[in-house]
Length: 427
Image (cartoon, rainbow, N blue to C red):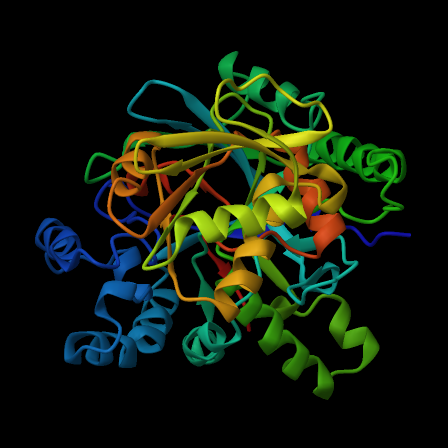
């Protein structure tokens, strides 16, 4: 029996008229562009904002970052003591985010039970990481969260809801004006527009029933994989969620079973989205190998991992995954053996990890077909253009392989990532 993985929460929103000068993008964005965060600071001036409560990764390891981090908990305590936030009890918040191309992304803010989440590879928990968790990235986040009285998350959960059952009726109510509007404003720095609607009482109960039915359907959702427990995967913010899990495991050691049931540290706020929604654009991240012998590498790949190759055409082999291989002006299609994995990228990355462990070569991860083809023109280089990924394959890949290879796919541009707004007490 799967515990209830996602539920209503006591959600905090700043008690402000001007949300545009509160909400900022996720801390892991623009990590190599400190000038972006300088512009954010200029716009915010001395206002209390989400920036007051987070540490941009662009500042980590700098004197500015150290000073800012030291004051985060105190600024949170001050905001709570001065009733800066308004509490919306026992509710969800439905979010409609209009991106710059006018597509509208839908999500539901609620809290996940950390007892249903495990970031370790091979986990059988209801909520799992999509990519391998880099353990050394957890302690810095633990240090911040351990002292913090509240959280403002950018965690994104994905549901494999191909029938669009979870959020469709809520979205229609929002469009029809049947839900209380909590906020409606333009996000800063070209982030688009966002609207939030209160989901409580009967509307929340209706969603809970829909979610319960969805959870019960999992046992028949992934034929051939002997899987009956994967409900959601973490699409963004996994290391922040891993920090929350790490702290909860420490906290609960000093609690009775009864005290554990509703302890605020047991739950983490997150946004739930449907991976199948049209606004969710998944783009494969391709591979380029340099400083290697490209012909030898390609031959080794074909020998052990390919069913078929053809430099003349790209007629599909139904038993394999098509991958375009480029060495200079030579282009060759190979079909990777699908019996070796659920995803083309998992098969290719497994080969590359083994091959580069024994042979010279450097790997890089590239967005865009034309960029790969250009880079593959240099001497001692080979590029691989991967096929697009069926969205449900993401879940099958997590089930079959424990997690997806690093840099499997990208989801949207930096200014389309989640912005901080909602919060929750965590101790």
